[in-house]
Image 1 (cartoon, rainbow, N blue to C red):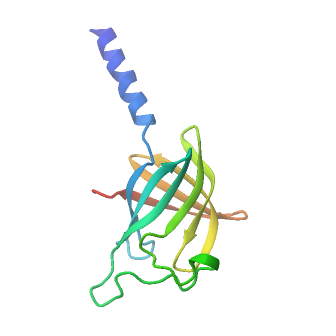
Image 2: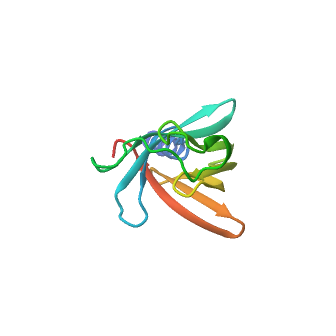
Length: 140
């Protein structure tokens, strides 16, 4: 019986640490605590990317605004469908070496992603300054 319990414990520990960032995540507004968007993270050629697939907006707001603050080829493009996470590389339980775009201000930041307590931690860096957000599973 002890052997069976030990095997179950190690199996559960393995699956808990092997959680994937791939899937749909609900972003939360830092100021209001309300949902802002759904971001779908996917793997392509060994790297990880994320695009906005849904925005939570008031009925009287534009339901698919353009990224007016973005630079270059993204300027004036629809935010829904926009790839905001690019080139993330898996390094153990952490994903880094990629970038994240904030379509609200058009700025791009170095990025680090990891799973903690079933949620996605998203950290954007600018030099030595950073901000970490918690994204929830989209079905929560």
